[in-house]
Image (cartoon, rainbow, N blue to C red; front, side, top):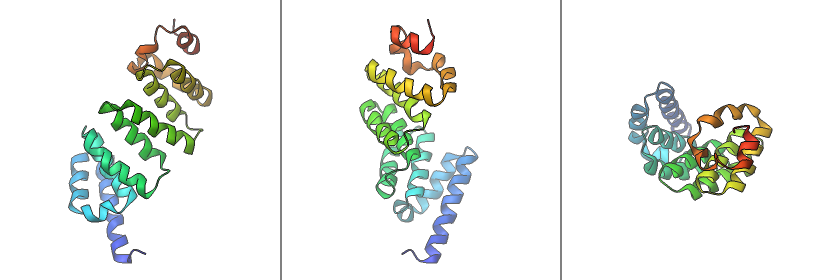
Length: 171
């Protein structure tokens, strides 16, 4: 059990970091979290904020470690799985991004954003059947995702696929 004073301090650290992130000041949030690195390392939420700071600063490789630590502490947080997948994609580990999102889908199968992002990553992995299955799931859950498809570069490998054109109505 965490002592009350430590718990209150950790809550303050989290709120400060979250406030800086909401204000679009990830460098300030990062500094705040790094000043309290021992406390941050043992708290899932603080680790997530640390990963988010690094992600927003385009330090994707560095963001992976605190995001993974957050998942060690709370394994079924889909927001952390999504952030981790985002980072894996950007460091060229698309298959790891897919694994991360598949875990998130297992936890929250009704989240269209998870299926949509998974479709993007399967497309990048040149796996059209998996990509189309995930995109179909996303559109079944929330048809508004159809609006994002024309501008989504991750779907470029599928643009000429007749099944993709049929599913999206893009000819």
